[in-house]
Length: 511
Ligand code: UTP
Ligand code: MN
Image: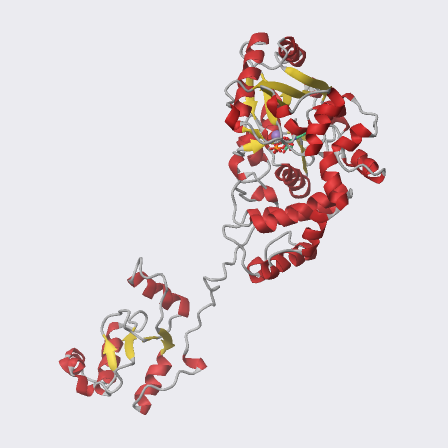
């Protein structure tokens, strides 16, 4: 052992500043005291310096070789990073070495080449250029904002989802929607396939589409779909309010391609479809938030007039923060259970008397017949009513220069041919689809959760409930099959808690 006094003298001497004794200026060594101990560090420092090595007392960015004893790579890295908080962010660049490298270098008198055995093992972290991100498997476990980073990919996948719907292949359609939904939840733009590793819901087909777009800018399948006569016709025909995939497909097989063909060939239409044709152009023009709010004021007035104390709530896409929608969805309730009974016919009459409804159809909720309803419906299920309507919304402040360009030939022709009306844009009102739902106070939270969407978020909630919790969720109730009872909920937060899910605010439900 070197006597303490001499060690001190040697280690503390100024020879370090004497360039002549530093034989290897490009190797800057720092010995980590942690677990090594102060006295051993002092001894080794002196030894190194005497042999012409540059050994620093303190750690600094100029250090090239960090030597430690009995520490893991992670421990050393964490310690070093803690020395420079808020540093460059590039992490520690020095070699993290075991004491064996130092002792071997001392023995040979020069810095030995770094062998595998000298390196401290540090778990390989993903490179910052390849963001690896993990997401939960269910859409209701994720936060999906309205604006996201992967529109190019999601738009493409949603074309394929829509096409699968047109072909009545629901499984395939949902698979594409789930894949798109995962990409919507990513906090970055996907640039390479390797970034998708470990993400859920990305099936082989979706991955092929994504890969092609990343590598070639577009997907041939998506392009071909968009160009296909069938896709274009199905989109135009299902765009008619009241026309579903089955009817549109029958028409397509009969050679119909657009709404005007429906009129020209004299197809037999029900009341809903007649309204759909009559207001085709308006109903295919996005509803703005301002229009939704204007309709909200009318509905509010109607509801207060027929049942003071009742409340209306805007749901659907607008509640999720969408700036436009295909319709406007409202929930109507009264804080006192039972007061809401018979409310819908009164509201509808009030609106109709004032000429505000172009179309309306009030139905009992079809929930009882729904396959995915709970085992037994609550006793008050039959009070749940829904009104599909088309409002006649005045556009009082419309200046001529705000008027949009006349729509496609088809739309103008439709309005004219069927009903002898002029262009829909020249009118001072607009037809707007509005859904009204009356719910008892006890079911309000379930209805709010169920009607806020998105459609895929709702689907994922129900899938989660069934598969992970043995529960059955609807817009009316939550049934626990294990306990054989309904679980009460007066807020959305409570329902998420029952489901064992973290609360997701409406603006993050754009799955
Ligand atoms: P929408 O079809 O109105 O969708 O249904 P949206 O999200 O508001 O989108 P846009 O902007 O209008 O196109 C709203 C929610 O209401 C539920 C669905 O879950 C959907 O997410 N809903 C809709 C039902 O529960 N039952 C229905 O019959 C229709
Ligand atoms: Mn809606």
